[in-house]
Image 1 (cartoon, rainbow, N blue to C red):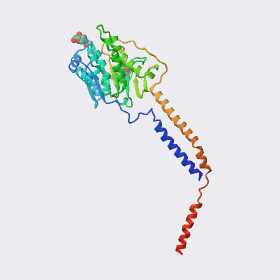
Image 2 (image 1 turned 120 degrees about the vertical axis):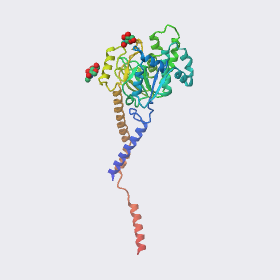
Image 3 (image 1 turned 60 degrees about the horizontal axis):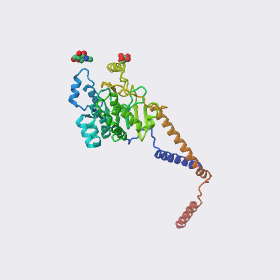
Image 4 (image 1 turned 90 degrees about the vertical axis):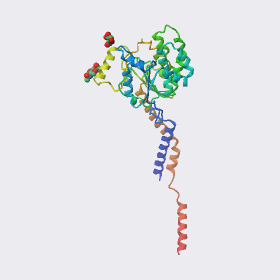
Length: 358
Ligand SMILES: *[C@@H]1O[C@H](CO)[C@@H](O)[C@H](O)[C@H]1NC(C)=O
Ligand SMILES: *[C@@H]1O[C@H](CO)[C@@H](O)[C@H](O)[C@H]1NC(C)=O
């Protein structure tokens, strides 16, 4: 009698443990099904508009080509494609972020506006933002599932966050962090002698990096930013140089040529979604402002997380089993069930029946 009792007890404890554990600590390293996904929207910004872009494309020393825009639309077939010109950008701001409209209007250069509008677009709609000098090879969709924010680092040190390639869910407060940092710096641009480094610092990658540092201080302290991170209630991915949309350093002409050749002979690596060509004339900003310690790469992080998760399950089960030992002891010491009363009742019933029958 004791054996089935113990087995039942053990089974019910295991089930109870599993339920208690799963409800108290949902596995943070599996992408939850109810998580909001980055919407399938491709945003591209050319404030001078579609016509100006077509004209620019015809020049042979062009910085931007409509073929590249088209290649990205082809690579995201089935997505919503949003092309932002100045009119649309202004309408978005006056509709939802009118507090920024005066600053936006005051920027003395179009390039500043083209930079500044990005977090507003991504906050309002979510999706993938790509610069106009990005050519696309394939759909990024298989690499986007489960993440709230996706960034690109473009330097070998992997301590930067580029604003040319950004993706995320709509309404994410990181975009607000970027907006605030833009707003705090916009008056620096109100001067006539605007250098490229000032642009990079006041609306360009300087802002995306500063916002990242402010919003994800834990990640920013690491030696490099590459990998998948769980921080500030978000799952964040940072792709590095050589993957995602930045196969090459901005000034590595040999690499840029090789990518074209690989595209020609169909040997592009599968983690290369496109080619940021850096055709916009610009100079590198000072980078490497912060270099933390330690590395927690994506796969290592999730592997460690899963291991810890399983081990904590085992520990909880052991703890519960220890707590259940008194019950188990009762189980063991319990004698065969006392059947005197039912037998007596049965006998009485039978005797009564017999009496009646007789
Ligand atoms: C661009 O066109 C000009 C004249 O139309 C020509 O002289 C120049 O070599 C061309 N440049 C390239 C890179 O094709
Ligand atoms: C394709 O092009 C790349 C880049 O130039 C080169 O390294 C590679 O050997 C080429 N592969 C083939 C199969 O031609």
